[in-house]
Length: 342
Image 1 (cartoon, helix red, strand yellow):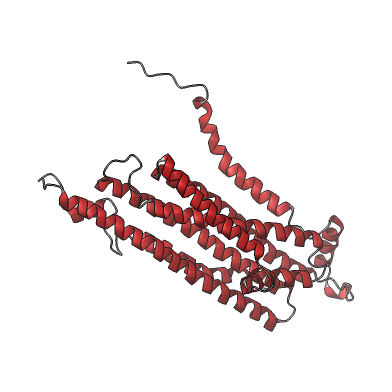
Image 2 (cartoon, rainbow, N blue to C red):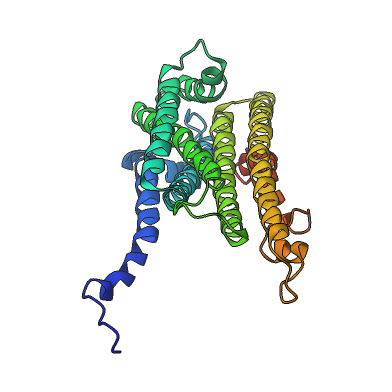
């Protein structure tokens, strides 16, 4: 039988591969372009002062090196913004596909409705935050108010508005994507969408999906910790004395450590129970089947299909679980030391 010729559309489907890298490039270019706090005249003045010695310009109130230290901190923060947005989009698409594959249409509508409900609560919560909430004061307002207090010569109004928009987008994504990831993890425990009785291979495929959800969830949580750390450390570049800088950096480390532990515990509470249930269900199915000489032992079959729970067999997954906790001290290395050559 002669195979059917591919359609004209499918002949050019390979070009879709260009979309993800071009999206990342345009996102990074846009973030970089609109983050400037220096005009053309300021730029030429900055380079001139950098090349002149201090004795030639003793009365200059503008510190070129101090300005560049702040620029370094700002673009490290923007680096984490790009990472957080791309990781969030990746996690959203992957987890949404897993949800779609795991459910029949009626069940998919219920899961989607639950997701919209919880995401709406999250967006309303972040919209309602103000100075009366510690979460607002300790994370967003701590840095934003310090940037605003630095004055228009160092942080202009244009840059402040830009920062407000970028942080708001990151925060909204940070509330919506974890909801999708949690529903995707729950979906791996759902019965087959076809209505058939599950078998061990079905549980093996669900375990594979659960590991994919864990990877995506770890990526968004790690990028979130890195973004939080860079955001909280940015104002340290605007503090004049070393003691004040160290205090800001220490506060940022403590806050990111708190949330790093929280996110790690969330991954533990999500992945381990789900993996244990899938492994036990697959083991029960194997033990119920009549034994055949050609069939491997249940433990061997479970190990071959990723359903045997041990540290050795799930070492990469345990590493992903610990990643948000390890990202907290890693974020402290992004900006410190706050010196022009650091």
